Image (tube, rainbow, N blue to C red; front, side, top):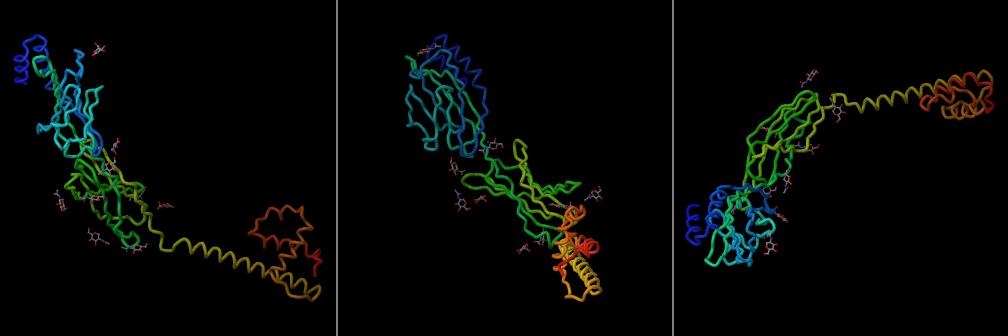
Length: 337
Ligand SMILES: *[C@@H]1O[C@H](CO)[C@@H](O)[C@H](O)[C@H]1NC(C)=O
Ligand SMILES: *[C@@H]1O[C@H](CO)[C@@H](O)[C@H](O)[C@H]1NC(C)=O
Ligand SMILES: *[C@@H]1O[C@H](CO)[C@@H](O)[C@H](O)[C@H]1NC(C)=O
Ligand SMILES: *[C@@H]1O[C@H](CO)[C@@H](O)[C@H](O)[C@H]1NC(C)=O
Ligand SMILES: *[C@@H]1O[C@H](CO)[C@@H](O)[C@H](O)[C@H]1NC(C)=O
Ligand SMILES: *[C@@H]1O[C@H](CO)[C@@H](O)[C@H](O)[C@H]1NC(C)=O
Ligand SMILES: *[C@@H]1O[C@H](CO)[C@@H](O)[C@H](O)[C@H]1NC(C)=O
Ligand SMILES: *[C@@H]1O[C@H](CO)[C@@H](O)[C@H](O)[C@H]1NC(C)=O
Ligand SMILES: *[C@@H]1O[C@H](CO)[C@@H](O)[C@H](O)[C@H]1NC(C)=O
């Protein structure tokens, strides 16, 4: 900085440049923070106000990284690729409206500090008139954590599972599992394993845990990744494990119930046939009835007694009950046999 001021004084002698040198002293200390996502575009601002309305023809503008490698140079309005380091070749674009340099395809290695310099190309040579540093930090979003079951719950009350998340930066702070039941939530920590790609420098992280699963309740497992530096939490989709079914499963119960109903129907129909048969035997000895025939007979009977409310009220399931009633009351009107 002292050098800059000396240079400004030495080169020009004008009051204007002394003032510029003083402004530099004040503004040069500032450092702007900038953030970019991996593989996207970062911005390296210069924050030049151009209060003297200098045209690009009068200016020499360039950016350097912390190792003094040149990213970009604009010499009196002309791009000069000659001084640009190969690392940055073809990766930059200058936004004239905002005096900002865009750095494309940002890599983790690109994080660090950058300096922008603006010199005035006057009759007496180059005069530095503006300088700004910016700190670029680079982030990569970890993928949504993903749970993988390693064991079957049906066979074990302790299940083993893993959770993993990939391609993020910087290194996350913590990864853990949440085991939620109806009335409790427990946290299960584990040693976070991380691997870093030696080219991209992105991290993959994972944990492996053994969780005790209460058999009598439904549980929901969620994996959580706590990120740096924002402390943001990233959640996996829940992994739901339903309560173990009781020893006597409900499905056979249902079948049993249907079977019982069928038996009842058969018995009732049998009784109906029996009663009909006995009544008929008294009147006239005839052929024996089956349940189907009885129903058919009674359907005809019901046609004759349409207006009877009880017939319409009965459901299909209770058809045999309906038949019993009718058989008893309308017996003498059955003229089929
Ligand atoms: C970088 O971005 C390009 C598209 O913009 C994409 O094709 C490529 O897969 C990305 N690379 C990585 C490592 O994410
Ligand atoms: C700045 O200079 C340009 C010509 O170089 C001129 O057209 C413009 O009006 C000037 N603006 C101001 C604010 O002086
Ligand atoms: C990364 O995540 C943040 C916050 O969730 C989001 O705003 C941003 O768009 C994401 N960036 C990329 C490149 O996925
Ligand atoms: C888990 O259960 C499935 C069937 O539900 C079976 O195919 C698989 O082999 C079981 N895995 C283990 C590790 O027991
Ligand atoms: C689950 O992990 C534990 C160690 O954490 C191991 O002793 C056990 O055998 C594993 N169970 C299964 C079914 O893999
Ligand atoms: C949940 O709460 C009920 C009472 O509300 C209790 O009987 C049961 O033991 C609790 N379960 C757990 C896992 O804490
Ligand atoms: C990280 O995970 C990605 C996606 O699963 C995989 O392609 C890559 O090889 C892993 N990298 C490391 C260093 O483990
Ligand atoms: C990156 O690691 C792989 C092995 O995982 C190795 O073969 C390769 O040479 C390494 N590359 C560099 C640039 O270190
Ligand atoms: C568990 O969840 C299922 C639905 O997934 C539900 O039908 C059942 O009643 C639940 N059981 C308990 C004990 O909460």
